[in-house]
Length: 277
Image (tube, rainbow, N blue to C red; front, side, top):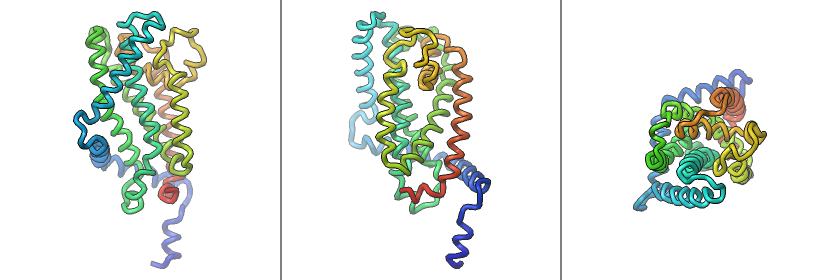
């Protein structure tokens, strides 16, 4: 085959063709989801090889932070420790999932540059790898959730099925966010710094450490903050509370709109990602 014929066969053939190729990438990634999971597991094992506690070092440090903040801020906010400690523990664990997925998504394609240049693996499989890796870490941090729920008696009132539904919606939304961030970071190397700074800002604008009822009801900082709904979807059921009206509808709509935009971006840039690297 001449170089001219090769260029004609591999050149973009229009928006519809690119969209179909992107969907085929998703299909092939779904068929090899086991590979994404094994790579994610290997990432966790490799990161803590030779360590005694492994990933539980992060869980331990997070537990110490929860204990310190829970005891101190309960005094500052004049709240019962039994009420505030579970609230802040769940908030920190869930925020860790969201924030870490976002920041690590910046390196999704950058760190896999060598593999992408040498193999024909579907690109979306690397996004799945990042999501799975953070879900594995969440499984380790679940020790903190179980502890506070058991110690403070919330196991009697929590609604676990609804909380798991909320977690599924959280994963669905951080999935498309991670895909967008990974593409942007592959093209522009300033994106990791921007994302890191934004997440540091967002944690203080989101009720992770402070309770929503500390500010006027339906304040703009809550109703316009998507991270608030992500936390609410899981934390409220685990604490036996009712979620804010429209929380799950908001997250479903956000996931649908987000994935539509993310897949459109993916179809446009999919061919170019390797060249960005």
